[in-house]
Image 1 (cartoon, rainbow, N blue to C red):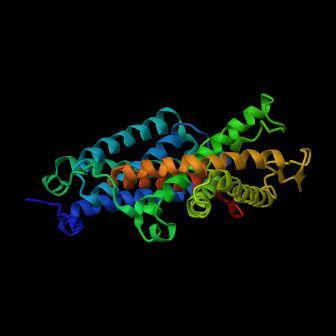
Image 2 (tube, rainbow, N blue to C red):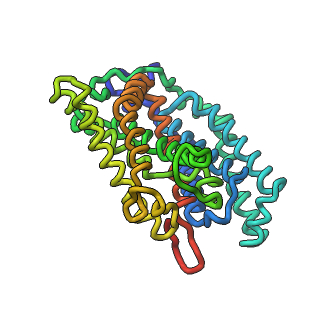
Length: 361
């Protein structure tokens, strides 16, 4: 019996989910919602980068993938759910009772509510793992093998105008992957830049007490994510247009491209500074030469612009070419992994519930 059909009819040919798998999928969705709600409520100043955080991120990613594997009827879904569910339970017990994370919860809400929450979460994972492990219906349903089929559609390559690629799911999926990846890479690049300042390579100073930069190294720097989206949607297409208009003469296209890139980088840096520094005072360039309102300066604008130009002309084309060769199922899976992790970490860092109400930023 074939469970997958060619020419785009695979989804219609998938075996139907029984009530058991529908309940398991709903339980994982519930666990995701609870994790996101908990992340939104917590004050980022009150949590540490310890096992509690990493098991939460692991639980979010594994729950999201479990939902995706079930929806895709993936044969690998059964073993994945069993192993990750049991591992999540072990991490939870070790963290709550051996390392003492549960003591903080007890202090806040009491022993009985804490035990009820832990028991409920354990029941979700143990029930899901037990059912998936022993059910013959699950084995008969999760049968689709995710094949390594490369993406060869013409609309996926950067040579096709963006306005045409925007009509297809792979474009938005890849854009989300780039956004999340560069949001984290941008944070780590900022840490490296500060180290280079300390080494005397660049002028400036930095705040060693900035916990967001040095301690919360999974804090997403969304400005860098927005920058890569700008590269994909505007700057790289503009570079391709310049190359076409100049007959492929790099000596003309590159300087013109650099001007637009420099203006874009400076605008992003200035906008971020005006909005973020109003509350957090992340940087102050008033002592730097050629600064404007203390929010931007010539040195940093040049560094960002040169880096962005390299990305537009060399890095992004390589990324685009690489993504076009990645199996579609793997790219989809990577999308859900990164988006779920970003969503959890963004809620954790960008907002929390205080006694006086919600606090954003």
